[in-house]
Image (cartoon, rainbow, N blue to C red; front, side, top):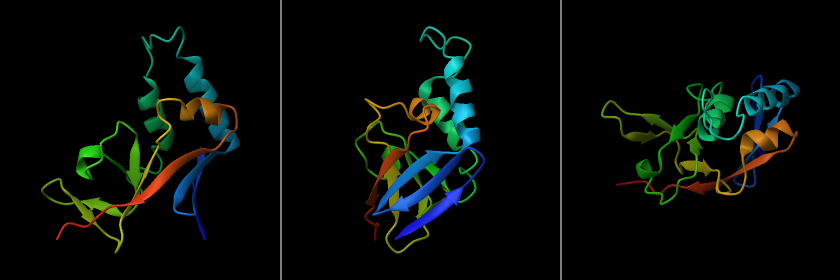
Length: 135
């Protein structure tokens, strides 16, 4: 089963428990523009790759999707994690809104730059996993 959500720059598809993120034509152009300001790799005067990833996903974040910090779900990774199965409670903890809450992490973060992949028209896969509910 595949569920799809789209915005100006990206199309998100849930496929076989994972999240596939592909760029629209506008997304390809936006990703290329972000890469163009990186310059010599020092990122002076521009945003670092993780910030640029967040910029590309911004239309989704706060609109049903959220970034999840690894420590919020007990993950031992530096991967970018996101989910549409949580909200933030008054005490800033995560509150599940699904029976089996799932998070999606960019586990290839050490070898793949999503913005570069999207600038080339490619698809980025975020690996999905169910988070154990606390009793």
